Image 1 (cartoon, rainbow, N blue to C red):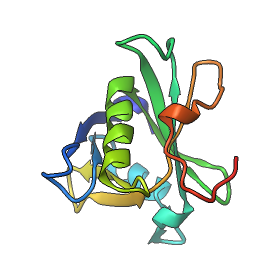
Image 2 (spheres, rainbow, N blue to C red):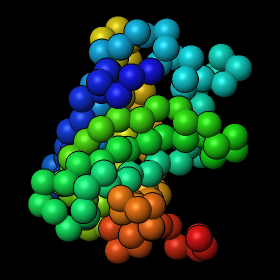
Image 3 (cartoon, rainbow, N blue to C red):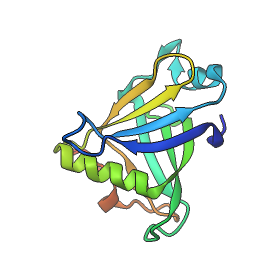
Length: 147
């Protein structure tokens, strides 16, 4: 699955407008590829088995920094998908999730040309600098989780 099959936008960042901040992803690649990546034994992989992360490709203090967001299978460590995005979308999503609830819940919604969107309700998003160091101040880390 290629990164250029994805277009990303952070949406619903105002708590008064929506239930949960959302990272809205448009997918325009082959449907069977996306389905194969996000299913396990023909069932959609549940959100409880998904980890989300973002890694800066540029200096994280740069206003126009870009990076790569990824979803991985928590049990196997397998990359499910990854896509390029502006860091502003991710940092705005983290800020909105923190403002919305103490748990920092947010959604990742993958819109497909054919079929219903795939929606994951998540509460963790680890953000790393371009050297691979965890940026705790920019991450969503649920209480009780030790890294």
